[in-house]
Image 1 (cartoon, one colour):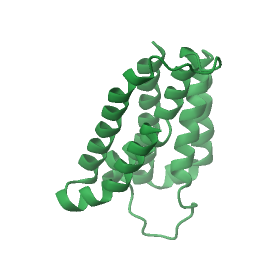
Image 2 (cartoon, rainbow, N blue to C red):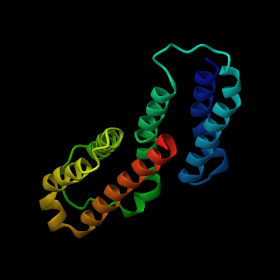
Image 3 (cartoon, rainbow, N blue to C red):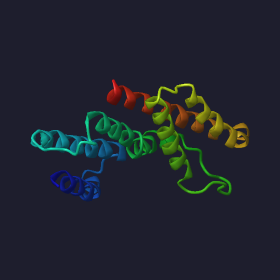
Image 4 (cartoon, rainbow, N blue to C red):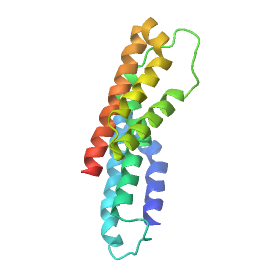
Length: 168
C-alpha cells in the first residue's frame, strides 16, 4: 500500500516539479524513475518477513520485472531519447496515432517471450514481419527508414539489457 501511495504522489507531483524546475523532459523522467527506484529500495526491507503467495516465487517475480521493464518505461525512454529523429509529418497521416508505440511494445514483449523460451532465431521473424508491413514507406522515405531502424535497434537493445539485468 505504501508503494502504491508513493507512486501516486510522485506521478501526481511530477508535472508541478517539471514546471517549477523548468528542466528537459528527459531530466524530469530520470528524476521520476530515480525516485520510484529509491522508494522501492527503501520499502524492500519491510517485505522480508511478508509471506507471498506460493505462485509468486523468485522466478515469477523476475519474469514480471522483465516484462514490466520492456513495456511502458522503454516506450517513454524511446520517446524522450529519440524524438529529435522523428520525421516531420509534411503529408497526410497514413497511420493510426499511437500505433507505432504499441507495435514497439508488442515487438519487445514477443522478443522477451522468445528469449524466455530460448527461441533466439524467432526474434528475426518479428523484424521481418515489421519490415514487410512497412516496406513501401521504408523504401520511399529515407527519414522514416532511419527512424524505423533506430526504433528497431533500440527495441532489440532494450530487451537484451533487460534480459541481462533480470535473467542472469
